[in-house]
Structures are given as C-alpha cells and as structure tokens.
Length: 299
Image (cartoon, rainbow, N blue to C red; front, top):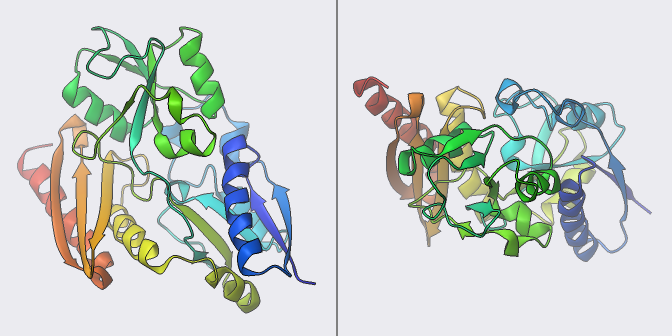
C-alpha cells in the first residue's frame, strides 16, 4: 500500500487545512494511506518579530519545504498566500484543490462593524495591505501589529488588548468561528491578498507518482485564477509584505483580475480582463500598470 506523508504546520488551522486535503485524497485514492507530519516553522518559533520582517521569506513554509526536499515528507500543505513567489528548485505545486471565501473580516469585541468602531479604536493587523485599505476609510483608527494564531488573536480582542482585529474569513470558517466576524468586507471595500483562502499542495518535481496522485485533487480552473493573482504579486518584485492585493474571477472563458497597490499608504487600484488562459500575462500587465500610476502620483 502506498503511504503519503503530509507535512504541515502544527497550528489548529494548518491541521484543519491538511485534513481538507486528506479528505480529498482519500476520496480520490481509497487505497492510499496518509500520515500527517507536524513541522515547526520559523514563524512558529518567533512570535515577537513583526510579520513584515519575515513575510515573503518563507517564515511559515520554508521548514516544510526543507523537509520535503530531504524526503522526510512526501507532500507539503500550505496556505497558498504564505508561499514566496520565488519557487525553490526541485519542488512543484502539484495541486490547488480548494479555496474558501477569499474575503477579509473584522472581529470586534462589541460586535461593531468597521464604520461603527469609535474614533481611536485599536485594531490589530500585521498586514500592510489591510492597514492601507482600512486607514483609507477610517484614518482615525489606531492600527497595531498583532501576532499569534487565530485563537490567540481572538483572545487578544476578547481580553481588551485590542478593540478589533482583521482576519481572513477563510481561516475563521475552517475553524468553525465564522460567527465571530462582525463585518465581512466586500471586494470593493477591501481587496484580498493574492491567493487568500486557497491551498497549495506541493511535492518533489522528480516524484512522478506523487504528482499523479495529487493531480487527482487539482482544480484546474482555480489554479488558473490563483495563478493570475500570484503572477501579479511576482511582477511587483516586492514580496508578501508589500501592500498589494489581487483577486481573479472567471466568467466562462474570460478572466477578470482586480489589483491594488498602496505604496506609502496611497491606494492605486485597477482591473484587467482577458482569456482565462492568459492569466499570468494579465497579472504582470496589471502590476506594471499600477506601479506606473503610483509613480506618476509620487507614491
């Protein structure tokens, strides 16, 4: 019997996401045995440094990729948005099997929406993207960095350390905590991070057997959409900590890609459309367009 070892972070959310992948694998390949291997990443060990100091450098992914390259695991399961755009030699994303709701959400202690928070309220986020879009609407709020897994950040809101905090609704949903959100942002209010809500399942490039198994759970259309978003981010050459957002949607054979950058807090937003198969080119074109507009505005 074939056994696949699935490498993942040990957080409750990461384990839940790995279980989602495992469920799909069991359905596609009932005769394959699965073993979950928990791996501690640099981001798990360092709970004090600002996320922006390590985001984009593989804080939450490189240790799992190292284990994959060393053949300590056969498969790596990631939150796709955590992966740096620079791909390590020898590895391939073999499946993009699932995307939860990609939108952002606000969790406030008293159930307030963003508009209902009092002036000077303390809002927790370590995302420059979320910060820029929040302050563009509510410049009177005080945004502070916040670290920890989903449960820890929720506790910091409940304890009064923060009046509210910003989350990916996908994480809340996967943990059964969606009801904690007091406001879910529409895409016109807050554009999400590229690949937010999506899972990336990785294996070794020379492991043809595992690639074949993972192909059985791949969503080709989703891969194209997320690929457009990721090509947008890669073209910026700025890493995951740069204030950038992208979301792609399909209409039959047509793809529409929405993008945003916020250098120095100045929001620049646009969209582009074209054939679904042209996603990577559309992403690069949109990134260059937004950078040019930002430069013209002196941002």
